[in-house]
Image (cartoon, rainbow over all chains, first blue to last red):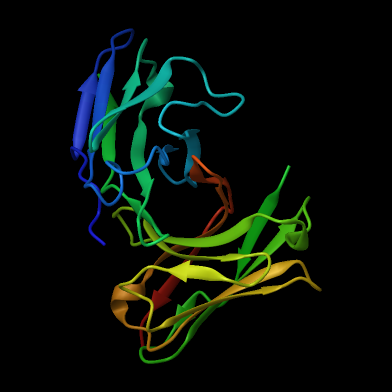
Length: 110
Length: 121
């Protein structure tokens, strides 16, 4: 299985918005709404941010939102804060009953 | 709240078997869920290794399938990872996690803190 495609890095100023894309295929992102996003600050374990394309677990601020169109999912972070600086990973269920991650995107808050 | 803690040798020799255990607290493995392993080579991205259902069935990453075994021990509320024929490419932080897959979702919701395993002679 091939990794989902994410931009290596994105950046934005405090208070602004950024969007991270995650492109898969018809075997994963394009086939299922089983897309999730994870936030990983430096030196820590990943944390679930979004599941089922656009749902937020309890405790995740509504500044974080997800969407999907075709084989591309997106994570939008609005009202950027310094604490949002982290690596972000998308993941999708596949038609082989496995999970596949994206390569990760490093978010820099300017 | 489910809590997970990885344990095992931090150093493994090339060609030997990498073995890790994940202790689960706050939830009984036999009650359900699926139990997964994910790894992250230093400075690189996440790689899903595989999962096992509480009942014993599961799936593996095709790229690792020939070398991986994940098992569950309900008596000790732990699950384990074995990766045979280890090479330097297996050097990574290994995370255990809970994997929930429903009719319209599949995600990793609780994670251990991770343990670094280095493959070197």
